[in-house]
Structure formats: structure tokens, C-alpha cells
Length: 346
Image (tube, rainbow, N blue to C red; front, side):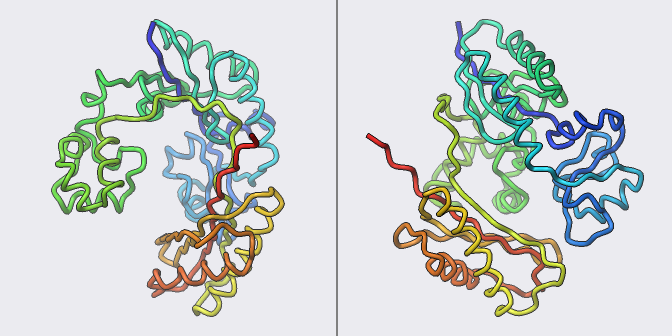
């Protein structure tokens, strides 16, 4: 028998969770985001049904822009408490399979499996989740976690797809590097500057060149991604948050650095309060800035020592502003902190 990894991904999760209590909306374009009012500024789509996506609506799109693309869609507010309850029902169902489970968030998880027919087991998992929770899911089957996760995208919606070392390059080789998990538009543009545009070209790139362009850690990691290399361990320990964040989209743009610094200190205080309540400590601080052209940039720094002092976190956030150009007014700010690992109790 062969060891397999199954990536279970709930399709259009927030929308699907809403349809459980609004079944009359099935088949209609549905958009979730903010308070559900698409006429209000500073609100962003967080999930769109497949019907809404066919009209050009995507997560991250301003709600007003979504309303122009899909004026007849149903717009619903975020209900985080509802999504947490539904997510836990799904994860409990997956635990009930008796297979090792690694939870990655509300809407995705990995299962470990030893079997000759992983697709049959995957289809049985889909049936369990649908029967137990009413939610559809897609499942990627892989010989490591990376290939399983990438494979899920080919199975959507509500399908099963196997991606392994045997068919990785046939499926992925001619695709643009941006098709790789973890490579965004800016990364793809930088690769293009060096003549690398496809997954196959990145997989065949000289490791020394990649290390020179991206650094000794990131460069080889990109090549490993292009080759489909990934982890083969299911981490079954309880999921523990590795970061905490607060961000705000402002009704009026922030025009001066003084305004930005003031708001960063407010956000830092809110994040620290969350961390202190959990009994954790902060090891890194990151700042996210989105300007009026919707360009989003972030920078991070490691603190000299772990802390829960508001002043230390706020000062680090303000200092990070030196890395941003801040040429345009700011519409969104965020402060994210990475948390130090919880020490073993032994």
C-alpha cells in the first residue's frame, strides 16, 4: 500500500455556510463581505459564489466594484461566529475518519492515508462532509502535501484530483510560475526579468542563480516548489495560532505620516491586548499598508527580544514605516505580530 496525503478544501466556504441557512439562494450569485452593504465605501469581498465569480467578482475586490459587475447579486455580511461553528463541525467529521488530521484553518485540512485507492477514500470523505454538514468540498490527492494542495485546484468544484511526481511536470510544467502556491504577481515579474516564465523553466533553473537573485533560503525554496517537492508529515497536534493581526480600512484616507503613526499605535495596542489575553509573547512585528491605488505592501522585523509591551510593538511598527514610500494617501493599515512558540510543558 502507498502513503497518500489528502488536501480537503471547502468550496466557496463562507458562501456555502450562508447557504445552509438561506437555501433559497442556491444557484444565484452571492457575495460575502463587510456588513453586506455594497454601496458603502471601504468594504471588500471576502468570498463569492461560483455564479458571482462567473461575473468577475473575486475575493479582495472592493464591494462597490463587485456591485457594478454583479448588480443583481445577493450581498451578505460576514458572520465570523457562524463560520467558526460550521468549520468545527467539518473538522470533527474529518477527525471521525480515524485518519491523521492537520487543520490549516476554517476551510482546509490535510488527512494522511495508506491505501491502494485514495480516490475512493476521498470520495467517501466528500460524502461524509456533505451528509454531516451540508457543505461541498474538493480534495487533492498527492504523494506529498504540496502536490495534494495544488491538486485541489484542479478538482474544484466538488471533485477529486491526483497530482504526484509522475504527472506533476506534465500538468504544471507549461503553466506560468504564478500558478505555483506562494508565487505572486510581483514574484512572477521578477522571474520574468531573468527569462523564467514557466514552472518547468523555474524547476530547471540553476540553484546558484536563484540563491543570488532571492537569497540562500528563498531561492532554493522556489526551485523546490517548481519541482513539486513538499512535506510528507501530517502534524496532528492541536492547531495553535502563529500570528495575530488587526487591520483597518479608513473611511477617510490618511494623508500624513503623523496620522499613520497614530493609527499604527492604536492597532499595535489592540494586537498586544489579544496576545496578552492568550498568554503568548510576540517575536516579530509586521506592518501592512494599502494606498488609494489598492497597491498593498508589507514589511516585517524581528524584535530584539520577545515582548508583550505595547510600546515595544508600536515603536517597531512605526520604525517599519521607513521601508515604505508613502507617496499616495493610505486607505488601509494593518499590524501583524508573529508569536513565539509555546514551550514544551515537560
